[in-house]
Amino acid sequence: MITLLLAVHIVVALFLIFIVLIQSGKGAELGAAFGGSSQTLFGSRGAATFFSKLTTITAVVFMVTSLSLAIVSTKSGSVVKKTVPVKEKTDIPSSQGQIPGGGVQPSQPSQQQPIQIPAQPAGN
Image (cartoon, rainbow, N blue to C red; front, top):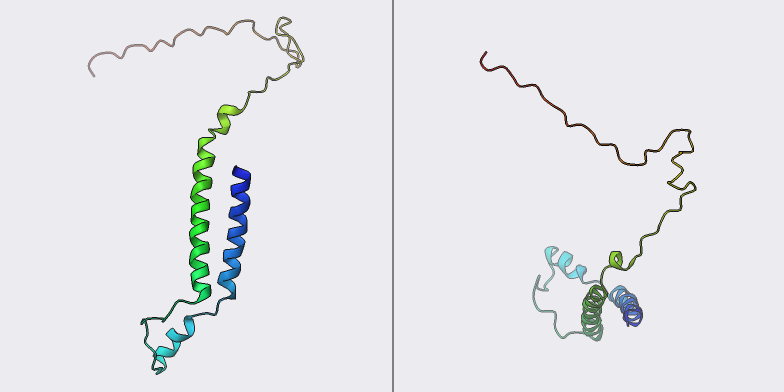
């Protein structure tokens, strides 16, 4: 499901890029308006062209596939929950008590004595 949706999303994204790039630019009217052109600056554009309608439809399909991918991918769960921890293999069994560097491995964690802080004398 995710693979099919992802393939459709990529095709729609590439088609949207293609449609936008083949359209003619609309920035010439804005620059010509300050040079004395008789066209309106931000007025109506007239009827929508075939390419502008196709761009709108493709953009809507792109947004729907993006939202669908986000929803479907979160329902599968976390990757962290699916992974199994890898147990490390040790060369020396813990019963021997020797570390390869020559030191001695303690069999039980050492119990540290609590640090006692001397009381401060009262007054100055």
